[in-house]
Amino acid sequence: MVAYRHARKALPKLEQDFDVKEFEDYLCSEIFTDARAYFEVVRASEGNPRDFLKILALCCGNLITPGKQRKADSARSISIAANYFADTKAEPLENDPQIMSLYERIFKRVVRTKCKAFLTSKEFERDPRMLELWHYRFIHVVNSAFATLDENENAQTYTVYSIDYGKLLTLKIDEQGDTLVNKAVEFFEAMATLNNRILGGIGNRLADALQNETTRDPLRKIAGTFSVSLTGVEKEKLNSTFLTKNCVIDDLLIDDPLTEPASEEPTSKKPTSKKPTSKKPTSR
Image 1 (tube, rainbow, N blue to C red):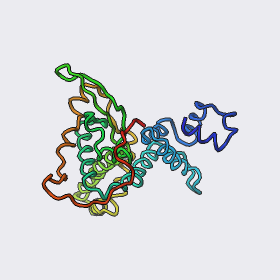
Image 2 (image 1 turned 90 degrees about the horizontal axis):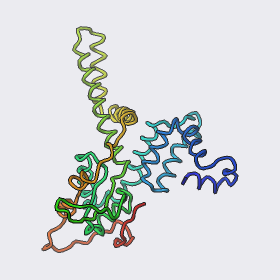
Image 3 (image 1 turned 120 degrees about the horizontal axis):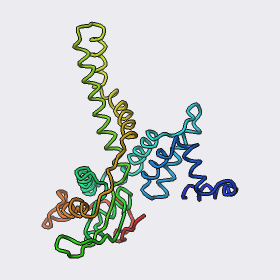
Image 4 (image 1 turned 90 degrees about the vertical axis):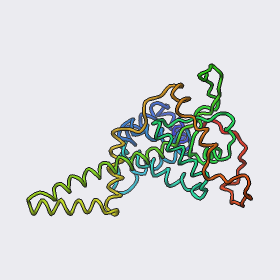
């Protein structure tokens, strides 16, 4: 709907030939190899129209680059989404160690629970660190008033967030790429031990090449991207009981290793942005 609305503004006659469903089908068949490749763009945008349009535009670049005209498959969509996170989202806060420390600890918790969603009690909804992460789209609000009952049947209200999909893609690509390259190294090292001078020499050279970072890094990304395009990223949807028992991160907000003791004199610190931090985040 977002892409259709923007395309219709640029091409007023578009709606004479396509309705919303027909336009989506056109994207899936003419810009992407299939609906799954297009869906990766939708997931990576996390409901943010600006991110969706930018990632979609990058995928469309395949069709206008001279000599490289080809539709975007799932692997290409995943690669673009992961690079988009690294190139546009990671930079604004990378010089703020306290916020990045919190983000990395949240991310490790998400990896451990194998669930991209996490929760905070309502008392933390105005925490300035969470507001910064939300503002720069490192995290996204899924539900700002998630009500449930605890073990004692008392009502509890949480804010439900999700970690950015691009960050998950980056992790999976790195992990699966490392696994595949390591297996290749083991194979070629075994080949090097063969009682055959030619095959042994080839195996030894290839094993050495794959352990060289100049060669290993691009191969790891290519192998990881292809693997993720086949296996996917997220687990199946989980119920509210699992979320409240395993995915509440209040302890991370209270126990921050980079927070200065109250007795110390506060040090001046350059703000990461000029926006007010008192605004309550909403789903977007």
